[in-house]
Length: 138
Image: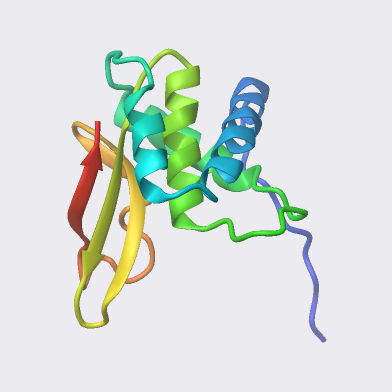
């Protein structure tokens, strides 16, 4: 007999849920724009002190949990990392937006990073085949 369990969201503070939804409301339409426009928008965010590694991971978790099922496009690493960087800015801090690649198997990936840590970089099999940063948007 197979027992079905409902999807359980991690305990996310209400403020982080709100910030994640706002960041997604900006990031998802922005992700449809050309990459150079996305980079320009991230560079236009205020230059503040970096959030802590724990904070960027908490914001990434909140954004990931708040991704809408109704969105007609994809919501993957690019969109989630972009929303995480925007969420960091909305909370008075900042994070770097990093786009990376690897070989064997080849692929592309995006994550949010701060000095001392990253959120979304080490997902899946990244331990065996790490990602190489190609573009870092400060």
